[in-house]
Length: 171
Image (cartoon, rainbow, N blue to C red; front, side, top):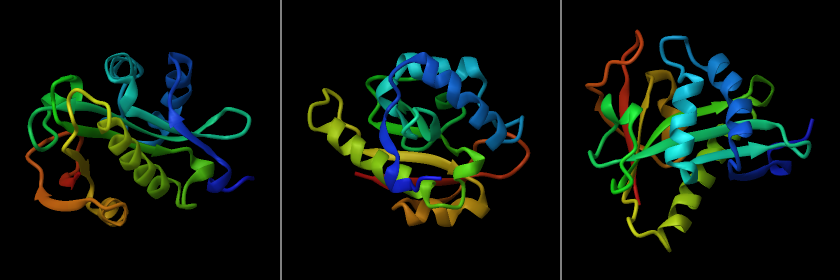
């Protein structure tokens, strides 16, 4: 198997790639937390510039980051199902890696390259992104902190059965 340096990192190009990402989402999250295919397609159709993936040489998706824009400074329950093109906060809804690519550093690489892609986007954007925000379970905080995020505290968002923590990265 190729390593993470051999992958192509880029924005998803079409809905077929979203369809290919959905089984990774379904396998990567408990059923009460995973986005539906319709939810992923909504996010792609409304914020395609915020759906970033890692692809093998054969074109299969190894992992992705999926987001929308919002005005509030932290992820809210409402932001999970909406996209505000005037929002200056990118709400990261999923960071997901295919099982065969897990524990190889791909999630961290995806996050760091995603942040770089947002900085690049800001160079020509009418609405500049000032912050990335996400929700994390306690056991994943070190992953996000390793990618440059800061843990703010316990989130008020209830989604699924476990508690969430707010994490942010200011640009």
